[in-house]
Image 1 (cartoon, rainbow, N blue to C red):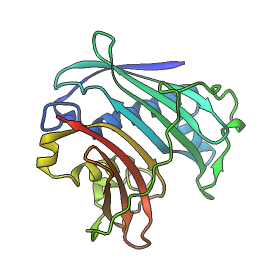
Image 2: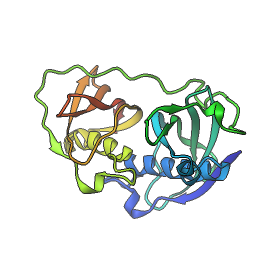
Image 3: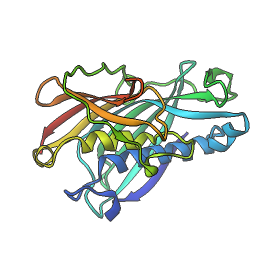
Length: 242
């Protein structure tokens, strides 16, 4: 029931430090999840026939180290079943020596295309049974950041919209990472992040990043929509010295 891909860290996957970027790490997990769901019979095309679609709800990622430019690694994923509403999926990145370098756990929902209501996964035939996460826990609820700073709203861009005509999940993460200046990234690297995807961003939205520094290493962030002040996602970030 596990699905595995052998990957290499391409030049367009890396950040300015020559290591796998956070956004491409996310995209690789998203891609293999779609691929494995299709193999299991619960993929995009399967759900589309029933006027349903998958949405990523929560994600927790812990990074021991990032693959270097040109380094080969293995990405493995598996379904952990459902508690009724959420479909859980884990990921494991290993290097050529079989050492775990990145691990993640995620929670997904199936929504009805018209009503946007949650579809109970227990209604699906042969959906995998529930199993424990690699971390022994599921992704948790992230608290909203508190900040009195003025927010700088910018329009949604063309390349930030996905096939469902919503703001692409990975682009939220890119906006948060890009909200930190070069000097901060020169001194710090992301060691862990936890994200809650709450609402759908749309092409005409204007968005801003809100931050709260709990301490020098632990931060809370959200992507805020100008029109209604809603948090579209919330993120908990853990940084370490580079």
